[in-house]
Image (tube, rainbow, N blue to C red; front, top):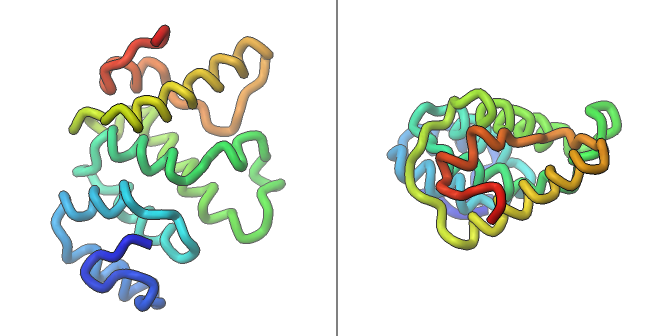
Length: 153
């Protein structure tokens, strides 16, 4: 896990981690969230950060994709392997917030994130063509104009 003022693995207590992250600036929280590796014990901190109004859409999409949603995209809630429920709940929450417009435009995504977004959106388009639907479907209408890419790219 990316360290943030001693927030790393040394900090085993959930309350301690949350207290430490709450003391950091919004910019530090966004930076931490974008770089967090979703290791065990990080979902509490990521969940709190991702519920904050200062998190922008680019950060939200980056964090969502860092959670490797493709691992569980075709699992129903009851079929998620034990030990991964918290990660899947966080992915559910981030996806719902993205799709309802909770995260507002912010920084523009770099080329690496745009490639990841396009890959995810292409997989969604393939699912639609095959009459399938994954657990997490990101809204084309929300993502494409705000992130500055078109669906055909």
